[in-house]
Length: 440
Image (cartoon, rainbow, N blue to C red; front, side, top):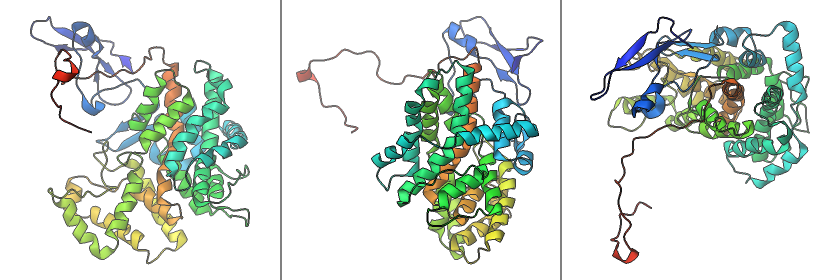
């Protein structure tokens, strides 16, 4: 983003003050932006719950136009990336600003592969968790603990340290994610296999056992790789903003990633695909769909259909188009028939694409809807859905963390507030205080 050369400004008139000139900035894509930083010197600041109208940073990484259904990574449309590249190429793109040449790609894959194993002592950390712990709880703890193993490369001002950290995180997150699953079901951890692809290696670590070899299905491998690509980055969402906010304090990158994982865990964010499948399980059969459609249309009913519509996209989610095709490829490959949950999903999709209620409100099936169906079909348990999202989004988080640390104007995040509590008052002696209303 750069300041407009003709000094275009917005004029703010506040009673009792001279008109305040606020510069208008323009990025390479998207709407013009009013720079309100000068308000502080006049004793004012803005109120914007959820920061829905506030740009917290400048970024060259991802652009979204929710009205038009556009998602670009470094200028490339997401559909082209999902169908013409693989996840590691997208990782290279996000980190370096452009897609790799054949030689650069080969070298990058080799460097990532070198870091796929985790320190043997990390295995013992898992024993501190209960067997029935949610895998996201484990991931929060283990990701943050990585800083204890790589404390000699935590200088956030050193470009080489930042690069090494990025490579380690890309490489080790699939290993840790698979370990969290294996631990929860009581199976031994499976070491990475460096002759497999990124997605293929994850499938192997998830489903192989020492008893027999696991053969990676290429259709499933491709589908999982696309899920990784489609979740790699999504601009300044809650988890990315959490990573940036934590990073603005100078926190080490592993702590920042742990903050991102914690934020992603919420059902309104990364937990949406898990919540979507829970909804499908609640509906249960195709015959009950009309009942739940009626509940969704009833404004007085708290029930909401999960996996439809999106906070940002007011048009069709561009990721969902690719995911929909991939979903049907997987169902065909696995020859899944008479599966109640998937039957419900397919029928709901048909209704949402034809019912005027959904069309008028642009409640199209989103990427969470289709990714949840795919993950369920290939045998990944529901409580692992958000873990896989975290695995894929790690590249986006670390890229934003690096960009923030390279920005010379970066400052510690410190949102303001409107205070609505008691005005100044004096403390009374304990014996003279009346009972106060209890909240806890």
